[in-house]
Length: 505
Image (tube, rainbow, N blue to C red; front, side, top):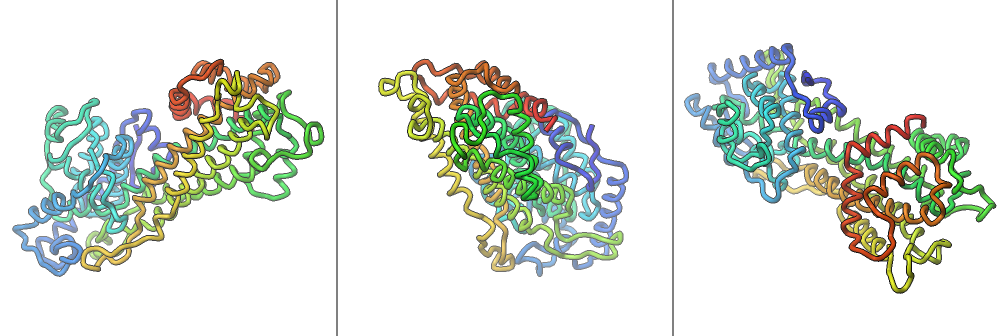
């Protein structure tokens, strides 16, 4: 059971909920803070005080006063009118993360929402009721209004959900689990949709996958080094200590660990004086990706525990301040950074693939083909990798440098953070397939070199890989192999494999 407090949720904990079906609960202290904040809202309504979003309209309508009798209508209209998302739904795991993160933010006690609503959000998570939330429609400022409105629809018994592997109306899923729709009171609709949880949830899932790929890329690259009789000297500790980047030093250490007893690596001067950059500079390039991912992790864990709605309630209602914590610029920058960092893993991987298949760059059979000329072997796998990295270059264009005014220019600068996070996730899927292609080609190369000469670690990877992907004895439909390998790179089994073999690094 993971206890949410609004203050200390981390990536490891949310990973447990998203992928290991851990349940969630709210701390008593946080629910008490939420209740005090709620009482402040009720006092504001009872005194007919003019406070944005509680007794006024929203956005450009902030100057329109709302009568006490219409408070519930205001919140209902807000959710319905803002549910304008379009396109394919977010992956279920992302929508689940969105619900968790919204509940966690509300538990900070600055939002004026009833504990009942927060508990209902957690009940959805624990029951496996996942809102269907369209991916497109958020500008990433004023919060992720459209996506979070689709999330909030489920609480009022509207919209659609995924439940037990089926798509259905939310009211049907609520009835099956003994839950009931909620009537939203003053400020509650606004508190539910004013936030950065769509971009942050997408970022969290993307980061968790990118982290696993970054580790996996080093292990796959180690096998490529063997397939090309790479020079191990370039990974010597003193080389990387001389520059001083922690992540570069750690990457080199892991590769030395992976290859520590290999008979397929060479020393400088044995076959050649130095390798191409795609081999020799793995610690420098992959290490730089780790620097970016560390930055992304830091920003995500701050945002996961941030109060991002508006207005915020302080001093038990004595101070209600309209601010801009819903603006997604910090996450927009982080997501753009993650896009570039992940894309570079694929860029350098594709260059290693080229060195594995190009007969002008190695002494292996052309394109690793068993019958060069008659059979094309891995020729077109490199084409696919090239296409994927080129697509990534387009997707890596920063979304955060764009802005467009909305709400009659009241909201005149926006972050586009949700677009950045979605594109980052697309890039990560492409990276995984490029790495899958490198794995297939590297396995073929070391098989030609002699698997008995491989290191203990890479040999274990080779054996597992061959359970999934047979040796290339003749041309076949390689698309299936690529997807099978990519699927494995996403599994907990592969993650466990990495941890087992990198623990000494």
